[in-house]
Every structure is written in C-alpha cells, then in structure tokens.
Image (cartoon, rainbow, N blue to C red; front, side, top):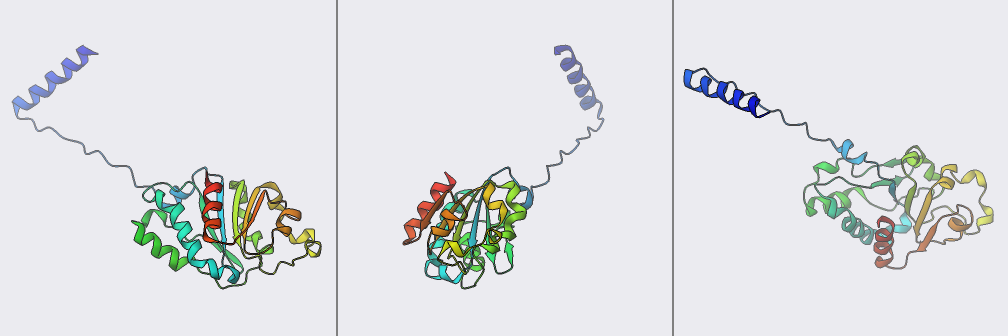
Length: 207
C-alpha cells in the first residue's frame, strides 16, 4: 500500500513540475431528500385529527399541543405522521414538512391547515385512513364523537372499519369513551377536559 502511495505522489509531482494541467473532477453532492422521503420512514405511529365542530373549543389548545410535539423535529426527519380527517377525505397537512423552517412558520402552517367546525362522522369516516393502516400499528385519534350514538348497542358491526381491530388505538375525545372501548376495542380512551389532557395524551402516545 505504501509503495502505491509513493508511486502516485511521484506522478503528481512530475505533473506539477512539467506544467501539465491537473484536472480536478468535481464531487457531485447527493440530491436533497424530498418531503416524501422524510415522511416515509419506517415509523409505526399515526396521529389522526378530526375537524369535527365539537373540537372547536379546544382548537387553539390542539394547535399548540401539536406544535409542541412537532417542533423538536424541525429540520429533521419526522418519525410519525399526522393526518387530518375532513368530511369525505383525509389530508396530510405536513406533506411539505421539509420546507417548514422555524417555529413561526410551523405555527402558521398549523393554524392555516388544522381548523375545526365541520361534521365528519367520527367512526365511519375512519375508513378513509384505512389505506395507510398497513404502515401503522399504533394510532392516536383526536375526535368529538361526531354522529356517534351515545348508546353503543345502536352501532352495528358494519359501521366499524375492520382495520381498527388490527391496530392499537388510542382515543382522545370530547364525547363518551363507551363506544370506543366496547365496540372498537380501543386500547386507551380519554375524555378531554383540559389542554393538559391533550398534551399528556400526545406525549404518552409518542413516548
């Protein structure tokens, strides 16, 4: 190995002394990772936030709690995913995570994208996240129990998306936990009464 090094250095010195131009090959930097790359890590935790009108009174609390758990990952790979459940569809409010620079930008994004006051069916609408359920085995669901009957006996088995039975579901709700524990077999369910319930629920889920 030493002989090879000496030989190469000799060639270099000869080239320099003879005036032969030395061609430097530029090193091409690796292309920057895209937002989709950052959000397709092998994480198994998903946070689903309903836009239900029953969450309106906790709207700012939810926004600030989300900022608290998202903030530490600015300029880093996000190790979990957040989806927004709207009437008839699910959206990813942070699909461009890599472009969010700084806490003020993050706060603005959260306030612009995560709003409440709509009426998605809290249980049946979960079918819209079923396509993603194969990648996640732990889901936290923030909901207002919109359009769910108080009496669990009124809910038919066909009303419960089947994939919910194959994941660990944690529910934070402004309504009753009865349906989630008896019909959906949620691992945990907490009725929201304060901002600390939201913050503690998110923190425990992500730890």
